[in-house]
Amino acid sequence: MKITTTIAHVVTVTTLALGASSLAQTADTTILEVQVGGPTRDAAYGQASEKGLEALVARVLTPGTPVYAQVLASIPRSELRLGRVVREAAGAGGVSMTVEVSAARGVVERAVLRAQPALAQTRIAVVIPEVILRRPVPDPAAETEIGRSLVESGLRLVDASQQVVNATREIVRASPTLNAGALAELRTRLNADVLITGEAFAEEYGAVAGGLRGYTARLEVKVIDLATGQVLHTQAFQGSAANATDALAGKTALMNVGKAAGALLPGKIMGALQGGGTVAPRAYVMRAAPPVTFAQINALGSRLRGNSAVGAFTIRAVDTAGASAEVQFTGSAAELAALLESLGVRVSGLTGSEITIQF
Image 1 (cartoon, rainbow, N blue to C red):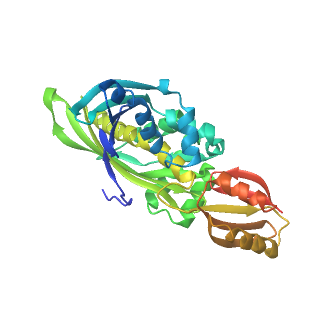
Image 2: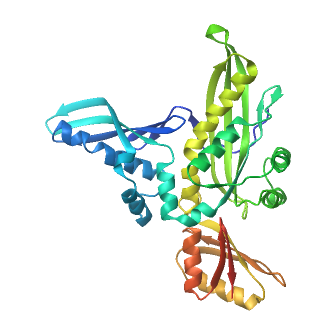
């Protein structure tokens, strides 16, 4: 099977590195190992909750920013649970240890949406063709798990009909590189701002103990801004499973890699929507309702370019239906809307990466 999605990272289902802490993900719980130290054992252990929370928030937001501090302060420390001491060492300078800290999945993401409510209006679609080699998957397991994680995190998942979803899967299969025409068709069909797509497959690796069937799975995902075609994030996941039949083993393996992706993607999407993702500055589409002239939109572009957070400003169209332009901006859509209003422009709509204005 040919895999066409660009791979930025490969992550296994169980563990990944996170600075001075490590993180494991179950279906509903995030477990971190944080390193702490102090003059006494109690003093060191008492730092674990705060350090764990800081590490969790840093997965979504950039430390030191105002929104990072706001979210960090808003999450009750009771949301975290301290577990076992994994390692401990005493020396002349005091005690150092590694402590397990756990939290329910989605705690940070929901806090981010409370602090930045405009992010919750972004419409997200998940369309990932899946196959257990030699047999298609009628009800995609990885796609389902990713969608569940988005809903649990408070994000807005597009609820398209099965007919529309099946049609969009065929578009993705036919055009894995998603050219401009395919992106425009997907945006119209799904009525979405952000698309999570890619490819997933499971493959048999043979019988395992107890007469079970063993399967490995690989999931490659891309998060795409449908308004601009900008790839916000790309990542690959690997996992495995064993079950009584080939179909069950393959589907469970796909479900496991979907859970691994679902543990990370809500935070990655929120970071990208705030201009803190892997691509910066982010491109936004600005639409001006009629009546509008070229002189008006060009003058607005000149004023926007005078702001250090604005990169390129490109006018795409000016006609009787209004005007459209693309703005590269290092902040969030809400921050760009505030900048436009400070320049005397009325913002009449804001969703995902698209802003509607009136002169």
